[in-house]
Image (tube, rainbow, N blue to C red; front, top):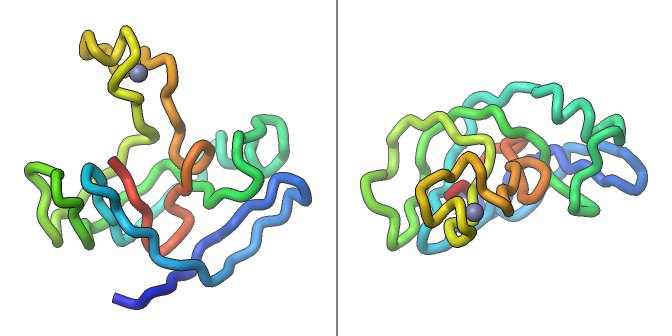
Length: 129
Ligand SMILES: [Zn+2]
């Protein structure tokens, strides 16, 4: 695997979207690296680029409707192996708020949307929980 990849990077201040070379992200112990094989353009992506739904990061890789193949697995990830084909969730819950500890992840008080709060899948690779 190469050390760099192509990614569409959106800069909020200029509202520019440029395809550039960036380092391939490294998954943490509870994350996997996925080789992106498809990623849609969601209406939220359009709103991000238009500026009507600003994200929290000055620069981010958009893309939250994606599918691909697991390329690397974090040391503590159970059940997934390199080569598994996956459809990725639209974000990640915190795991610690009053709703997450009750298993009501969809009501997480600190839910982070992929492509907004962390880099998404308009790239060759993406790291997901
Ligand atoms: Zn939570």
